[in-house]
Image 1: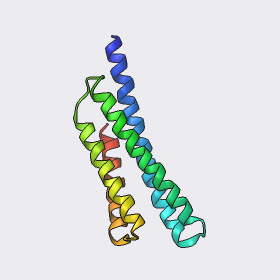
Image 2: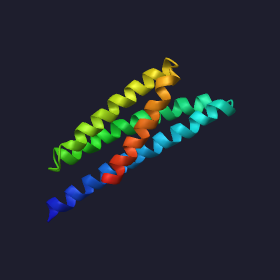
Image 3: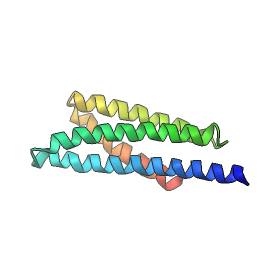
Image 4: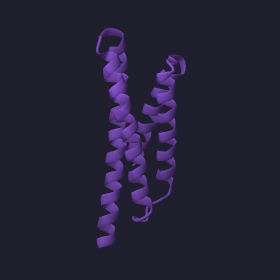
Length: 120
């Protein structure tokens, strides 16, 4: 019984981590719009990028904790690592000012994150 409760807590932590990542990706899209209209848009988008990257790392941690000690499936670990790679590419593209790839990749990441959240 205690094992089931522990596994549920870790899976719920995983779901919270995915939801946080999805929320930060959505907020990044909103702050990208502010880049065009407000003087503080760049600062907000830059700070949001750091938070989004941290949320992606938290997703990896939650997936590993749900898998290894919790006995959960290995799939979420691969998904979370993929998101971390995409987040890394996204940050590099943002710093390099390549909006032709940065913006579509952000849309793809948000869509994939919503899909993963819906499947959890």
